[in-house]
Amino acid sequence: MKFTNLVPSVFYTDLAYGLKLFVDCLQFEVRHQDINSLQPYCVVTKDGISIMVFQDAQLAKEHHPELRLVTDDIEEVYLMVSTTHPHLLHPNLDKITVRPWGAKEFAIVDHQLGVRIQQW
Image: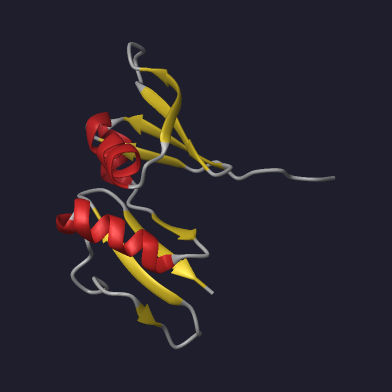
């Protein structure tokens, strides 16, 4: 048995918030969208990573996930995010920091989701 990908689902009260975070800030691309259904959603992708972003107010109230995106150039990602979307930097991890477990990390957050950017 072999798995080839993990595709998390993230729920927002308004799909536009998720697209601002993933497409505008992190430069994912919309691979598929179904915005006219009862539960609008998009599949966003970048570098082999896929995330399903749903609009569902009830599930958004129940789920507040944290994701980690691993990179091999955290300085480049931090420069891009801090320049274009500084308001998304998490107040508790708004600079690249070497964590006790040895990884470099910084974090971004919107009203629904926390994302740690990490480099080992």
